[in-house]
Length: 271
Length: 230
Image 1 (cartoon, chains in turn red, blue):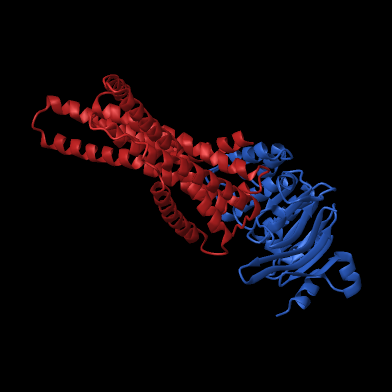
Image 2 (cartoon, chains in turn brown, yellow):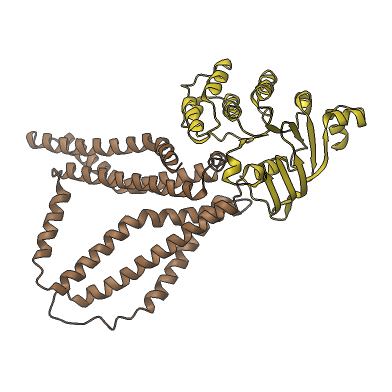
């Protein structure tokens, strides 16, 4: 049943995403094409205006692609689970966790596809389609040149934390959104307003919690030295703080996901 | 017993929608759930379909608490359009076929053809009435044990009402029960076996149509007008 839920969720939105991705790809190709034409026709004012126009449009699309994906996935959840379509979704013979997990998986598919399209478009616009692989190669070379094993391992840990945080960020976002919609569902009226309020309230509470937890961190094990630039202690403090934040985010998001599932399963209250 | 409700209560804030509802419904009957607007008909149907959770009390269908097992045997038609608007009718049929093992695509296409509904047409481009007909066709194309129909004839023209009632009568199996919520009593009275009157969230009468005619010497519609007179 999980596979069927994923299939129908993908079918619901693939056209919208295709249009978005196709538009971004088209604009990046047009930007490159305008640049190439400009190389042969010098001092053409119209071409310069067109290039600026495509450049602005391209930057807008690249920057907004993730925001649009977030908007699409959250809207889809709201329409399909909370609003009228929820009458069908919640009467399907499936478990509530399957509905939520299918939405998370589908949101991952759209986030990953947006990242791939975004990277490909950047490559096209820069005239270096394989820029990401080159960047990874350059980074590997940079790492091999770091003399201190202490500094190298600290940097690897930092990068690992950043990558894990980025990979888990859709889960963090969606579990928060699901929980807030679940809370809103409990109200007899103004469900959406309550969900939005809950989202802001939850973020404030989480920030306070993170500040308190970080305040209790012990940095006495970080060895301070002036020998290495950038100094290892800086990495030590950053890594410890970021790792703590990551663990906290995983714990809170998992808790919110379970709470959302329990509320939808036991306290469903559609309008 | 197909439906068992024991001391069912539902509150929305300070408002009581259902108050201590206890009732039993047997298999093989068509039951009219009758009451004025805001009496609790939709709330009761929503609880039985799993869309709402009762504040207290128990509801069982075929002896099972409301959940995934009851959703397999209950076919629910809400009072609103619940189909995904991006779908074509064919996709909606495929969707139901994917999720409900008791769904018959053949029956659905047959009914669509009889109502001249094009399976390739998108739900988004259809009128509200046509979308409601598609919904009813999908719901009645299941071989469910219980059909919960919330205002199935409320939004359609009188000519379509006859077809809808015919559809309901010809598509439910003898062992299944159909609960129809409506206030258009005269239109459905002739198909009902039992009626449940609901007023201010409480069941005030649960009787067979024949008993009402014998004991009160009136039609269900006439009794309804008397009981619920403003």
